[in-house]
Amino acid sequence: MTEHESEPAGTTVAAPAAHELRSDARDNRDRILQVARSIFAEEGIDVPMREVARRAGVGPATLYRRFPTKEALVTEAFREQMATCNALVDAAVADPDPWRGLRTVIEQVSAMHAEDRGFTAAFVSAFPQAVDFAQERSRALVALSGLIQRAKDAGGLRRDFVLDDLVMLIMANSGIRATSREAVVAASRRFVALQLRSISTRPDDGPLPPAVRLPLLAALR
Amino acid sequence: MTEHESEPAGTTVAAPAAHELRSDARDNRDRILQVARSIFAEEGIDVPMREVARRAGVGPATLYRRFPTKEALVTEAFREQMATCNALVDAAVADPDPWRGLRTVIEQVSAMHAEDRGFTAAFVSAFPQAVDFAQERSRALVALSGLIQRAKDAGGLRRDFVLDDLVMLIMANSGIRATSREAVVAASRRFVALQLRSISTRPDDGPLPPAVRLPLLAALR
DNA sequence: GCGCGAGTGGAACACCCCGTCCGTTTCGGC
DNA sequence: GCCGAAACGGACGGGGTGTTCCACTCGCGC
Image 1: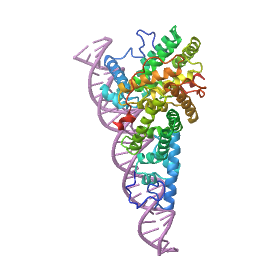
Image 2 (image 1 turned 90 degrees about the vertical axis):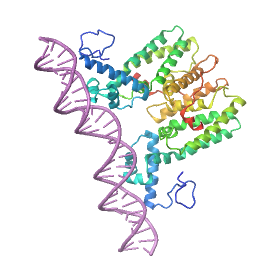
Image 3 (image 1 turned 180 degrees about the vertical axis):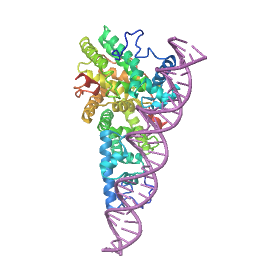
Image 4 (image 1 turned 90 degrees about the horizontal axis):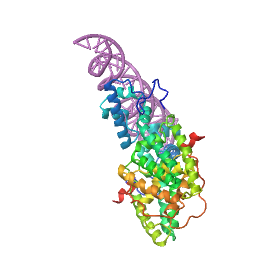
């Protein structure tokens, strides 16, 4: 995306359109993106644009000149993580042990969602018209589909597991809430471990990660 | 709750304060509540108050006279389901087979959350200051805690399972989204079945409920 | 019937949000 | 230094939501 800009060629890895910006503008853009990533991770995607601008020390107009819409900002903020996510999938698919690959990718993607509240929203695409991620996602899902089949054949994964189950587990994982990011991460870890046991054909092994006190129980002291 | 109202005695089952209303007012109140339950179940709790009023065929003022705040409306709308939920817990705790009781309560509470998007929000208490449900919830959690212990002792439940896990599973279940209520219910059913396998000490038995196509996969046709 | 007060609905208030306009500031090539 | 264009930020418009005000209506006891 944004390759259809009026630029001759891409010099760096993935610089969208920030090569001919004035120095101050470039600084501002970088700061905005940095702040956005931080806020989105901490508070989710529903943070007002004003707040992002305020914390970045710029006016709303500056924010909107660089990112014409909130969707654009969100997309850009999570591009990196999306790439990471895809890399995780690729690594998993390339793993000679398909069951270990599947296990690992579930663990890691779940961890990413637990660590970054906003990423989940971007992943599920809070902006349905954002086709940006859709294509990469399709590719990843197809690859995972193959991995699942191989994991079944090689052993380790129960034979009635399907791709939809993978999506279902990721969604369920993202439903976990807690009072702090650390708590969410810890709870997610235990949850995933439990998941893996339920979709594995192998016998139970080793202790689960520790349980975590969740908000609903706060009333109990 | 609301027993501390200024009424002499409860004539009917659980009439909050609707005993001396004019007939039309009573009709309106009932209709509002009925509409609210329906909308909340279908679209979640974020429906504007105006919309509830509109669908109930009344003006916003009427709605606000009966329910002074949105929180009050939500609380009242879900009181019944909360009671059902507590009854489920009581039944589970009373089950002579603790593992079956636990299994059943997980299945049923999960189903309730899947069937009613709004209930989840009310359950997790989208309004933190709503202490209304907090007390019953505490009682239920304590009871469940005992049930869990007995299920471990009697066999069936893995020994490292704790109350927080139960909350975690319910939360995770509520993270499941789909394009229709039916799809959510079906996916939830499969999810719960998977859960129960992971927390059970008994060997795998019988087929899982069918998988469900989830929104993320829509791109794959 | 009749009248009074509970009940009502539409407009309005206060607030928040996304996105834009415009007069001013600042970079950076000369 | 200088000066034009790029960049800036505060104010503004449009839309949406929870909640309230107020003049009018209508059940219901007499």
